[in-house]
Amino acid sequence: MELSHQIIPSLKRLRLSGVLETLDLRNQQAIDGRWSYVEFLSRLVEDEVERREQKQLGLRLRRAMLGSTKTLEGFDFAFNPNLNRQQILDLVPSPSDLDGLAKAPMSKWKSISINWTGH
Figure 1 (cartoon, rainbow, N blue to C red):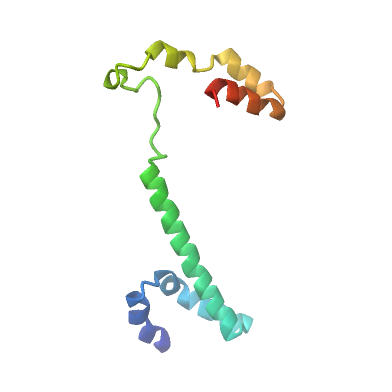
Figure 2: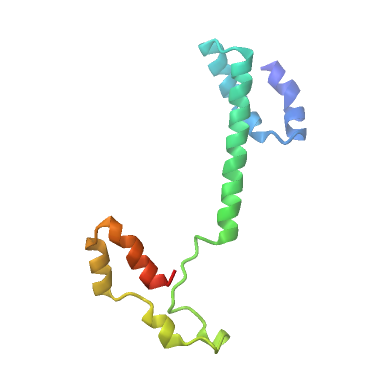
């Protein structure tokens, strides 16, 4: 479509890549569905908002490093010699505690977690 080629530089300049990615698809949907101009524009704006939210979520997840698995076995207790290693390891629930937790009704989970974490 000639019009989309005319607005591509403006969309890039305004950093509206979400609109840029879905413009042709939304245009065809608008033609097929006989959308009003406001509805068409609303869908394009929703696409941009969703793209930005997804980008922010991805950035936050990368910064939080949630993909990395950390265990007590890999913890460097020598980094802080004031930590009592045995006291921290005693906080880890035993397998029998975990079995009991799995069988406990949901109302018990809060009190169990409070006892384990101390909060």
